[in-house]
Length: 324
Image (cartoon, rainbow, N blue to C red; front, top):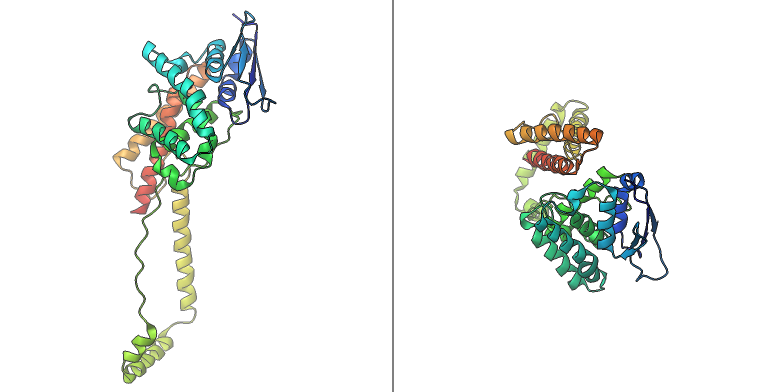
């Protein structure tokens, strides 16, 4: 059944939660006859997203309009929650994202922003998503709401919010896998902690050392140096330097290849442990499942989430192996 409705989306700068949902559902909404107009800038920043229902009634608010778009699309019902409890939690987190969270992040108060992000990070300590074990509207809303605040964070701050950083990176890749027209670009995320700084060794004073050495010792050293130069073959230093350059180049090439984002399999030279083999098997199986569900028109978001998580885990394992 085709819905004869027009959904008009209006949002001030930075409010892109509805725009993200609309971009993810663009094909389904078009098939259902639902037209979505996105206005990136409006005169009044208080203007909320609104949608016109088939009855002519208008509903407004990011949470309400996003839920309406999902229902009108005729698919992705699991984004609203599978059980009654999940549905209630999805609504709760989606509403909080559009109200309390958005208000805290909009404040010019660093403490308020930090507290809001830390609260989200703590909630994700034992879970992958906010309201369920799979992607829901709550996750999409929170991802879109924190996007601009998260983009401003320094690397150290992101590492201190490890759970939220992992969630953000997973959802942004899910969004970009599901739609090429997302209003939010991919942010580069580095999930590895910086290496520990090595203690600097104190350098000995060369002048003091030479003053303590006996004079005949200097002469003996000079004689040995002279003999060494005689025995040294022409081009020896250059050859060693060239060999060192080749080794360094190979090392860089090896590390660069292993650190390639979202690996499908471990590079040559890395020992195939049971963990790596299992991850490669998972990536193959989930990749095939995603392709199959895409072809059949099924919901491939859960399989895609598992695929991305396995690829990221493989990258971490390979990087750790190369550092040994």
